[in-house]
Image 1: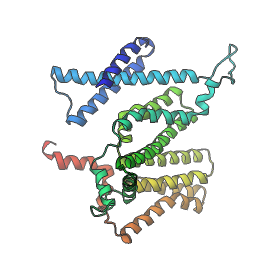
Image 2: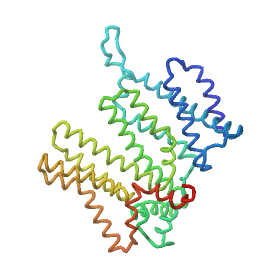
Image 3: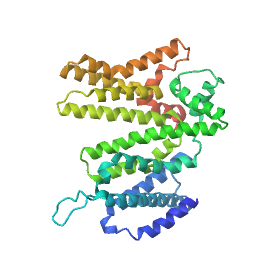
Image 4: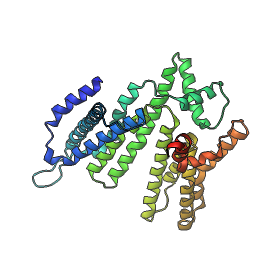
Amino acid sequence: MWVSYFLIYMGITKLNEVRLKEHKGVLIISGLFGLLNASGMYLYRRDALPKLTVIQLALFFAYAVVYAIAFLLVWKVFEYCASRMRVGVSASGVTDTGDLAGNIWDRHTFLICFLAIMAGWAIWIISYYPASMEWDVYDPIRQYIGQTTPTDHHPWFYVCVVGAAYSFGEKIGDKNVGIFIYMIIRDLIMAAIYARCVVMLHRHGLKKRIVLLVLAFYSITPVWGAYAKHAFKDAIGAALFCWFIEAIVLLVLDKMKHEQASVGICAEIAIASLLACLFRHNNFYAICPVLILAVIIILKKEKSIKTAVLLLSGLILFSGYHYYIINIEGITPTSMGEALAIPLQQTARTVKYDSDST
């Protein structure tokens, strides 16, 4: 609660510095940010929006104000950083290349984005030490240490990773430390992937304001902080799928320039597709059709079988790994119906749990 009071106090003092006429857009965005996050908190905590009573509405708008002020404060920080990074211009209009501060954004875009994202996630990570955990984390750990039957419902690779972190913590005397180490390593990888998204936008000529808004999206939107503090497979699974999409975008950009597919990019696609499937099996059903289409285009345009095989090597390795753990290691396979989780999961859950009200 003291954090909320601090944000309100800082917000009131800082809002006096905001010139309303010049920053209407930011104020509108901050208001929407506050309302949406407050609504999300109510839906998450109470499974409903606030009731139309004075107390409920007052509490709801208090939450919205806190979130809005938090957005404005972070925006002010980004605005300050952006102003310090502008390239200096002399009176004659010639760019002053000697301005060190002016070039820092272009020279260290990735590092700046990476640090900004980790800074935005830090309060979530620290507040929920060692991690936010529920059945999707406890069950894999129980499987790894032999308390329950090993299955591939939670991907076995993920089971081994989070289970190994738990066991390492036991060996050094604190299970929490083991899980926290896993969380930090995983979050560093996630932040690097999302920072690269921002860098790609910057390098392909988008306006700096848009780039900074995307950076703000990854660093201060609550869903990413909530993912960063949660030890379940969805967090890393989403990031690895994002990495796969990034690599596909780079491949498409190469083909738009009528260039041959880069071996490095194709290898990156293979690695990203393999890891995305290892941590989240559902990714296979989204990645497979994309890669099949990419292979068809490569074979048609370049007639390169080696490139096509390299693109598919991640899925080939995953299929071999999956055959091994099921048929040789004896891990109980999951239901094939999980393939339907991508298009139908929310509909199925609604029918199962709320069929009387729908």
